[in-house]
Image (cartoon, rainbow, N blue to C red; front, side, top):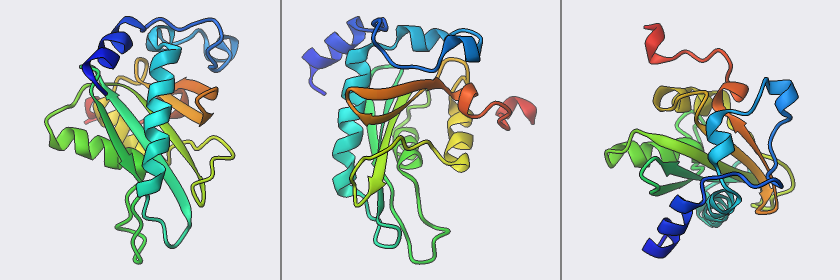
Length: 174
């Protein structure tokens, strides 16, 4: 992201009326971060996640996933899934983005956008696996961190991490 885009993203932290998110009636009210996450920010993260599909290494499942993670300083870290013949050493796109950010010293995050599909064709929402949700809970406030599941820049849902991982094992439980 260039500096002009970063400035625009910083100024666009209010969610417009047409943003998609889970029904506040079923969640007990939107998480504060969901209310501040703008359509512009969501679209940029979805765009960056979609660009990562081309780097996905998925010769076994042919299911390609891309992720774009926004830190609190507005820097975006991207990731793709990387499979391995032994399966266990495979790494999801979300964890790739998190590990890239943490390895560069960043540990405070606002949101992540995730896209994926067979052969890299996005046909449905692509929620994070349980391991990725656990990694998110290590670094993110479950009520503040937003997970954007997208089929396109115009078709997405925003969830708080707590909605997707209500009883995560967090550092405060140790």
